Length: 453
Image (cartoon, rainbow, N blue to C red; front, side):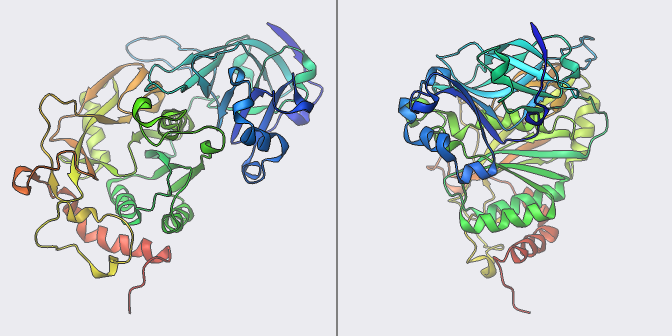
């Protein structure tokens, strides 16, 4: 442990969306030096000398020293659980991406409001789920004295203070435990990529979630189609949607699939595991519950009319549970309801799937795992994967099918089935009276729909 007082307080400031620490072998002027490069919103557009060198000379970098520090730095909260009665820790936890076979030692440098700074060894833990990809989600933890007073942190490969004065420090979040929350329900949609332009389904999903009681939605955006971009901007103006820029493709070759053997690439699904964990920590003290699901999925209560009544019942009867797993069920987009009641001509020009037309639900497949998504209390989650948490305090609960399940309108998994071999499930129709005009309204406000007077 080493302690010093920073002479350059102007370096301790809020800066970046994405930072990377690496050693250059491509740039003569930086060769042999450890560099911390901030990539702000502006830098994503005009990366500058080092950023361009990274893009052009990616294969020349000493990848053994690559660490991506993603979005924010978060202090993991300390709290007591009813069944454990212990304080977890006051460590500073950095959500990150690491090359799994190339971990290198780093030190944390953390400072308080008076720029009184300490060094501590950085401990890196790669999450157990990586689906075979070379890079994986990881936590870098800083354990040291007086971490509870720190408000800014950075990483370095050296304890030489001359490096620190040139470093960019970032704010530590979640420093104070809160017991009242801005939102009751937040939805975290992990990744948007590949010029996704499924406008109608996204609008219907958002408006359904509003009717179910969701107050906040977060989406990590790498790329999307031009029509969806208009819709996203409108929801952002409504202040229900938070758009987090996620230009991961500028720095790695992210995969558009989940399996390295099948899909290749550096990182699973454009960094889905990283963004899910980031979203939980980002809203740990902003939202009472967080729903973790994909953009084409709706966590739908069946026994209750909305999420609030659902969670009141589940939590009352499962007081020690903070992770509620919800079964996924497929509604094939290739099978349409026979009467075409919701095939509205005014939506003909809107790209995307009309979920109101797809009421046929595939039966469960024998001896095949039915994946789940989750509603979680974010304050008990330490690490999460896509379908279940990796580390959490307390217990988890698989919610019965008849109480709540996921409506997932997508490509069929059992395309050989006829309609009469599927279940008719019209739950989304229960919301038609308010849903249809609300979808029209948001499409009009986004400049995507014109309805004659």
